[in-house]
Length: 310
Image: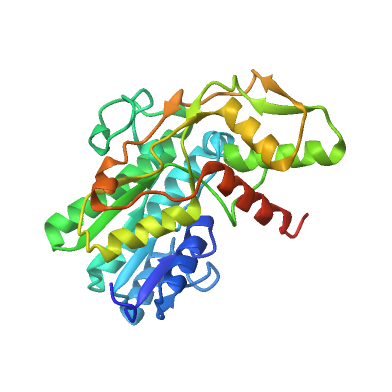
């Protein structure tokens, strides 16, 4: 990927897309193109195809998606399936029609079976039932992976897929009902500290194990894959280490300086018991994450405090 190449980042206002724009800018890439939803609705097939026909980017990072935590996924099941399917179908197909040779599709580690062997290797895809709470979203992302593979086979494109673990970082959503676990806990701990509360309530038992990746590390991995000229396949992106939700809450409390006690809301679901990615395929290429969980949480808290509603 040369620094003068035309690069389209789909979803540049989201957490991943904005991190990609930062990483590309830091890497000296001078021809990054973006569009807001008002300028280009990727759910509109004709508009998407017209955009690609006019711009003809050399590289595409497909980071546009409808995302959310357990409650959002489980409540808006139809929306998560439809909106993610239609975005990826339109973008991947329009890219092929416009002669875009290189595209990176961004998925999610929830595509793997709920009770998968740990750590989860890329080869475990479609070997068992999915986690019920986010099955529609996972099915949409699996379709995107398979679409890239199918287009490579039929049309000679060089499209690959990256499956990140649980992400956090600048530009995340801190909504208590629809966000992922880390930003939700961060906001809860902040509000508990501000109000002088003595408790931090977390959903479920606190026992599930999760892996967390700072979003700027993900962006670095995605650019790394493109720069390495990787032309196909599925790549897990993570740290290779996990932590219980209980211990995660403790780290967040320490970073924020909140000294209350943890209380568990057993009426809320735990989700998948454990989800740790096997990241050896990416490591063999020469990439590893560089941001520690504690440092990443501190950077994320700084972003939270700078938010317009704080």
